[in-house]
Image (cartoon, helix red, strand yellow):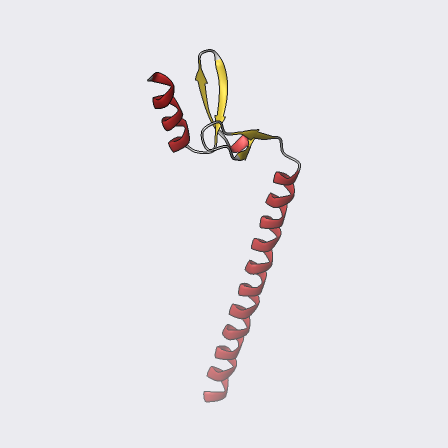
Length: 85
């Protein structure tokens, strides 16, 4: 009886280890794919903080008829408040 319980416990331990390794490999694969996708993406300059941002991920605002790209909502809000004064 104890031998059977030990075998079941060992099987569960091996299953958990294999599952952990496969999840880590899948996570690594998806992160690498995202990095490759971002590598060839078009970059735009945030006029507020002067950093470059991937165009597809940037926050946009239409100011005086022009579409302007920002790295975050905070930069967009700061730029809008400064341009009003």
